[in-house]
Image 1 (cartoon, rainbow, N blue to C red):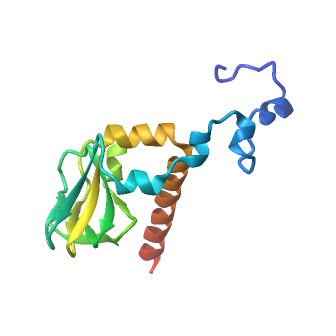
Image 2: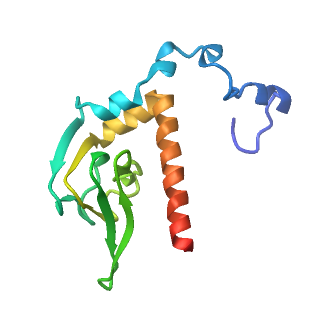
Image 3: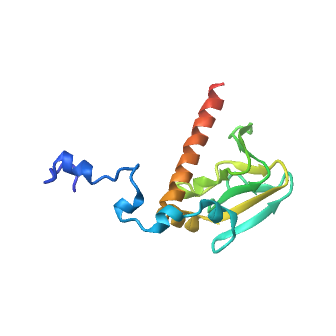
Length: 165
């Protein structure tokens, strides 16, 4: 429907087309893959577009200014996320650990470069996920998309709380 154009469907009918998020996926003709996508298995295994990377303490996962084409999921260890301002001042944005994502800015097509540097604080194991495979999982797997969006919102809230202190 074009913007500003009236629809033949009234508001009551239009809102009935939106699925009830508390309803079972079976009620919306979703297949069993909706219910049974295993995010832990997706994030715990290598495969096409995914590889496990082992890092030593102080190794860079990626550096500010690098081309952004992968997302990383921390399986073991801790990672520091830092930025260096134009005047050379270094600031720590976050310290991340097992279960955290880093490099998710690669999903945004307007930002092809890394805005920060991610450095291993301890020995780390990270799952490297190519941008295309991450986008494919987000588009095809509603359960994984929900997990990822929830993660991003929680991380944003933590960042805001840290800035407020």
